[in-house]
Length: 365
Image 1 (spheres, rainbow, N blue to C red):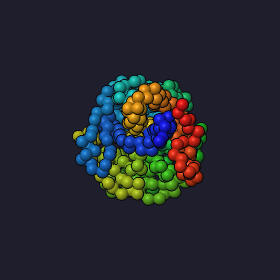
Image 2 (image 1 turned 60 degrees about the vertical axis):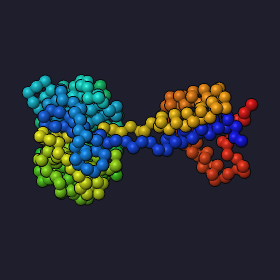
Image 3 (image 1 turned 135 degrees about the vertical axis):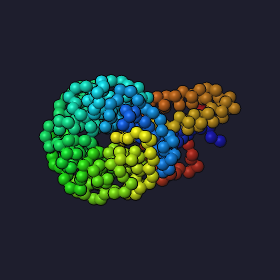
Image 4 (image 1 turned 135 degrees about the horizontal axis):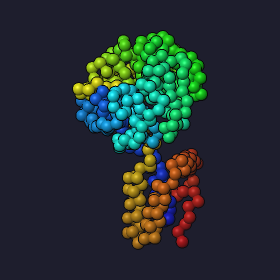
């Protein structure tokens, strides 16, 4: 018979495994900037355009003025580039928290901001379409520096995995590449016609929306043209990838959003209503936390077992252990999980005769 202390040890180990083994699938929430100074969101699960369209919800409808681009920081705050208008927010960048509540805005060193992008350090870059510059701001929104060369009506911005910044030059149909220090490196000057937005896929390929000719060009990491998407597009402006590698394009010409798979095959589209649309951005998906449901289910079962055996002390130990496990920093939980997996793999490879309990399991007094 397995002793209760051994059951406690095995149950806690199983909690670690189950908590990480099957996290609930993340929902890809797409945020869209509309021409009526509103930002809406869509749940993009599935490939039925009507279903996605029906999930629309208003995220923000104040402190906006022709928001030509959107970008999330790592904390889930959304930034909107307010290009023009006669109100207070023209030539500014507005910041909203994860609930859509306005927080603040950046008002300096901006002249017709179009594209936005964050580097890995959390600095925000804004493409100033009207004066051919790119402004850099720190985490607090304070201006740091700017890029002033090799730009011609810069629109979309995007960073590659190495920290290089790419800028779509709408004015001369090129894409300029700058290193992490802002120094010009090179440009792409083929298969582009009025590039507006840029986006990288998970393989490091660069996509550019050609607003003028209704196509999306694909380039590899070296800037070599690979292919293009030339259907189901009408004045494409914003581009964004979901966590499954599907590409979304905002069609300014017919007020729709088109969805393509990672091979460029059209999947579906839906209308955003009466307002034109400018930009797309996916809310960053956090690393899944351990499943509290899985932990509580297992712990409840163990506690019930111990209660039937009148082992109230062990039941309390289990409850405390679960709470402590959930309070451990994520990186430490990951290490515990990996260590436990390695222990099980060794046990499976070299099973001990008539042994089921874990190594160094204390016996019941």
